[in-house]
Amino acid sequence: MTTISSDVQQALTALSPLDGRYEKKVASLRNYFSEFALIRYRVQVELAWLQALSEDIGITEVPSFSQGTLFLMREISERFSVEDAMRIKNIEKTTNHDVKAVEYWLKERFKPHPEVAEVEEFIHFACTSEDINNIAHALALREAREQALLPSLRDLANDLRALARAHAEQSMLARTHGQPATPTTLGKEIANVCARLECGMETIARVSLPAKANGAVGNYNAHLATYPDVDWEALSRRFIEHLGLTFNAYTTQIEPHDGVAEFFDAVARINTVLIDLSRDVWGYISLGYFKQKVKAGEVGSSTMPHKVNPIDFENAEGNLGIANALLRHLSDKLPISRWQRDLTDSTTLRNMGVALGHAFLGWQSLRVGLAKLEANPERMNEDLNQCWEILAEPIQTMMRRYGVANPYEKLKELTRGKDDMTQEALHTFIDTLTLPEAAKVRLKALTPASYLGKAAALAKRV
Image (cartoon, rainbow, N blue to C red; front, side):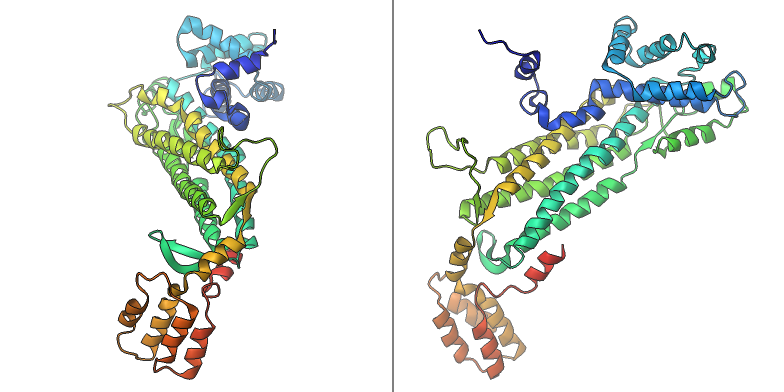
């Protein structure tokens, strides 16, 4: 009987493919969006708030902590373990409240340390759970953005940039409405995506992540009732900004999530660009403009041995679509809360990692697919050589310059709907035109493969 490891069993029985089939590919996101990560961020926020209360702001009951105690707090935050999280979950079985369980665990954890134990009731002082949660979620998004999401997108952008430059001069028949059109280069079409991706990354990087620490309905009610002489708003601002977040002065019980919604919208827009790329590359593979490197042992079809399917681009499209469905629900839902607070945002926010996990998986699939591509110049040149009619554009444009009557109409009559246009037929037509000889020479020098405008230069510049 075969022995199956617990990890394999867990993967096989996981409800979500992100925790099953694709677990290894998205494992790094667990550092930010798992239940463990959320608890760890809550611990960090609670400790940071307690330290903020120990500043010289007029709360004499919480004196400044010694360097040894500050070191201990930092160590608890940085070395927070799965065992610590399990203890908090056990406390939650009694409290039936996840944030209160963190507070109780911190009190338990500091029992042997009199300097903190003496002020333990100031852990979670004047806080509603959302004061802790909104900051925890914002920290998760900020750190995931900096350490996982943007680096992954930059890697993808670099792959595209290298591909664009490598094929900057490779002529390719463009297709508008799916029909033969003015030529481009393979590199320029990839450069277009790279430029869009760079713009999208800048948008994601610019999104501010607001947070609040202002009590039950956002007015510092309990704070001022207890310490009326403390400038709580100034303290809250310092506390939030020290954590690297943007202070929001106007909230209900919850931070309204407009920044989070903007973040998800920005990620969804990038995903849309990459769905566009996935479909285009899929099409180019179908046309034979790209070949795919064959991996030994891989099967393309269970019944057709010859097939090499564009599975990475299909996987990317599917996962990016799932991601966008979730991201757009999050961005539509999260800014809406009945009156001063309802709980619909709480369960919704727990799915941030699911939405971003599918996006992350899609980005990786694209990189795998791009690495397998090999351009097929012979096939691209074949298509170009069969489409001399695309040179109707420069001919009629030159005719306009020199005042030849009805240039568009004459080229339309010559070329529209005809698939047998030849170089000789075009040159014969050019010879009938009342154009300067130099203009005729320039037009006759054009070929479908050379009529490229600035495509190559633009591709190299990306």
